[in-house]
Structures are given as C-alpha cells and as structure tokens.
Length: 339
Image (cartoon, rainbow, N blue to C red; front, top):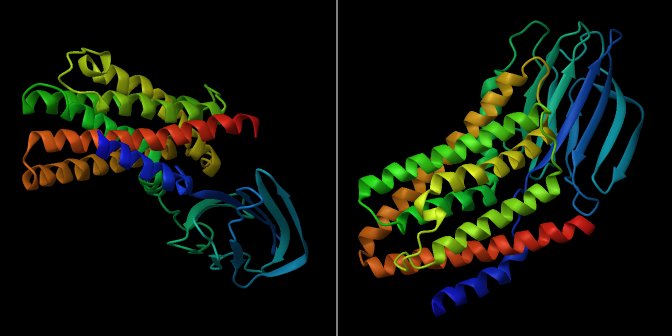
C-alpha cells in the first residue's frame, strides 16, 4: 500500500503536463476558380495561448491582396486569395510549414466541380495536388490511418482498456476462462463505441463534448478503483461478474468522445459511410495493437517476477496511478464547464 501511495503522489506531481488528446486539428478549404484564382480558408482549433504555428504554402501560387485573420478562444481562421496561373492547382505542391502536432484536412474544390480531400500531418507535411481526373487517394486508407493515430494518442481511452485487462487479471478462473471473458469484454467495448460513433457522426445523437469527456474520465476512475480492490475480498460486483456489460456501457460514452475528434477533422461529402468505416476500423486496429503489446509485456513481467503477490502489487500500483491521472482529468474537465 505504501508503494502505491508514493506512486500516486509522483503521478499527481507530473500529471499537470499530461493531456489526453494533444493533437490539434485544422481544415484548409481551397476553392479553384476558372480564372486561375484560388480562394483559401484555413481554420484550426486551439486557444489563443496555444497557437499551432502552422503555415500553409502552395507552390507556383502567389498571394493576391491581404490576408484576413481572426482569432477566438476556440481557434483561429485566415482567409486569402491566390493566383495560380492558367494551370490552376494541377501539380502544385501544398506544404504545412512549422506545424507542431497538427493534423490538417485539405478540402479542395476543383474548377470542374470535382472534390479532393487529403490529410496532411507533421510526419507527412507535403502533398502534390494531382491533375484533374486523376485517382484520389483512398478515403478508406486515409481514415483508417487517422483512426489508428487517434486511439494511440488518446491516453484516456487506452487507460480504460488497460484497466479492462487488469480487471481480468484479478478475476478468478482458468486461463481459458479469463481469455474468453477478455475477448467478450473487448468486443463489447468495441460494439459500444462503434454504435455511438456512428450515431453522433451522422447527427442522430448530439451531446455536448464537455460533459462527455468528464464522464469518460470518471469511467476510468471507477474501473481503476475496481481493479485496485483485492480480488479475494469476496465481493461479486457486476464489473467482475459481467465485465462485458460494464465495458459495453462505458463504450457508448467513449464512442461519443471519438465522434468529437472526428467531427473536428470532418468527413468527405459523398464518402461518409466509407470514411466512418475506415475511422472505426483504424480505432479497432490501434486498440488491438495496444492490447497485444500489453499482454506481451505482462507475460514477460510474469516470467521475470513469477511471484503472484508481486504481480498483484504491480497491478494495484498501476490501478492507483491510473486512477490518480483520471481523477485529475475529471476535475479539470468538470471545472472547464464554467471556464
């Protein structure tokens, strides 16, 4: 218990620097005119104190007139005109310069009425605009990658999945029984967040993001507290008897959180079902990769320190640390209601 309390104090000392979703999202809308002129609108999320520093450049194009900038507590927007000559944007290189943790969705409207969308990130900051009529980059592939990246950067979602794994570790039964229950639990969590992600993205459900994020943090607190309890205390709680019910219920909340992030990026018109499927598949791929890594790490740790009591102490310590972080998030997100 003493070791766990020390760990909690250390975590609380450093948790002020932790953020659940460090990625900022931006949208660049380019509308091509028949005269070679291009109207540009660049909008990104982020507070006035945390600018992204990203700058959009397009080769072969020059600015025409002054740029109109507007900054609000919720983000900023910049609008300007470019002259790209008779070829327009065909073959031009679009580049995101000086970006820090930015994901930019480029929404291009061609002069012939066609549309093109591309995701530009800090790791892949450049994009060569193909000639009109060329095949677009696969929508499915782009949104699968976006889903994988989102779940792997979503620390709160990963901590919830980690608590689900630890909960099964402290549950009595054979290895086969625990594996079967874990599979059912992870499947229920996936089904839960898939349903609400689709409903919220399609506009069937509209829930404010602030309370959703606060309750997501609370779900981690509750699950971490369940893991921290002694497995042999005789309490047959619903989380231990039917963990898939708890995972599926909280999965509905986490799906609303996924939908909030996806709404900031946007969905391509005409390819909404495909993009939604890709994002969901990407989230699941990232989630399964995390589960696999956690199970491998647990197996290696079990071989290094085979003592069951040592394993229980380690699981309880992780639960206390996870709960401390989630409590901080919960307080931070609730107080943000009145910020």
